[in-house]
Amino acid sequence: MNNICYSSCLTLSTHPRIVCQAMHTNNMERNCFVPAIAVHGGAWAIPQADTEASCQGVQRAVRAGYKVLEDGGTAVDAVEQAVRVLEDDPVFDAGTGSVLNYDGDVEMDAIIMEGKELKCGAVACVNNIKNPISLARKVMEQTDHTLLVGHGANKFANEMGIEKVPTSDLVTEDARKTWEEYRKFKKTVDVFFSSRTDAGHDTVGCVAVDRLGNVACATSTGGISAKKVGRVGDSPIIGSGAYCDNAYGAVSTTGHGENIMKVTLARTIISYMEHLGLSAKEAADKAIAFMSKRVGGVGGAIVVSSSGQLAKSFNSERMAWAFASNNSVRYGIDPGDDIDGGAV
Ligand code: ASP
Image 1: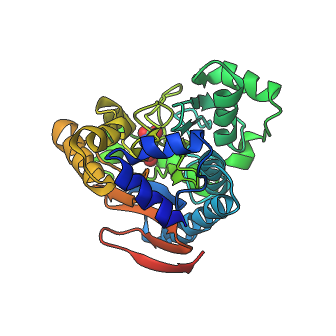
Image 2: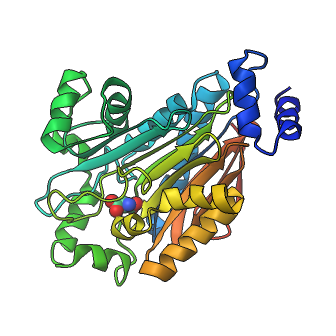
């Protein structure tokens, strides 16, 4: 039934999304689309010792998100749930496991966006929040704003009753050791993405399309070890760390935030799909190649197209990722990986 509906959309117009939305509006047809979801656990030179935990972590998260979609949840519900699982996993640099800034504190950034009305919510430089992605969702749904930062974002978290935790709950032994080592370097960001390819900065993200054909994306991070206090990277910036539009698809990015922002990587990927008619994979590869050539940027992205194509691309040494669709999971971490993770 899903496939029949989607193909009937395709025959009705070269712009299947618009026809499907019209059908939904008329209440003629519902649940047209095959749900699909992808997650990432950061683009960088993930140490061998973290390989197993990273691969397990992304598979756990994609299963949690897929279950939400299978149970009839929205794409927004699914990306929030998958990112919460990643935030709670200490192997990733988001929520618990966040890296430390120059002063040894945790400052986290997160964004969530939906593709129907292009509503978006983001937070930056927040402390003591267990799941920043849920705070970002509150910004999207409970305020007239898109981005809240620092003190204001933390104050809003209190108003919303968002779960707070002591900083010590978010800091892992690994994060503290990395901070001690990287504080020795002055130009932290450059060091991370050039000479020190072993440096950790494993941001997390998720993209999904639900049964109604609505797409969503989410990205969450502790940023980069020993970053300047108050530094905000690409992750909570709409168009850089994430972007989506029901007409084309959804993107979440990871990597060297300063360079990702220079080329607004997430929006560029969607633009290539929109203006050049590229597939999700072609658009992601092209945008990352452009970032590399234009500004020397290192990073990666996951993409889901409106029709449920899943794609990933990265020019870092490794990126942990997992996909779920048609009740099966695939995952990988090294270039060329495409491992069967079995049934959801
Ligand atoms: N993009 C993140 C930042 O620059 C880091 C990462 O993706 O690993 O804050």
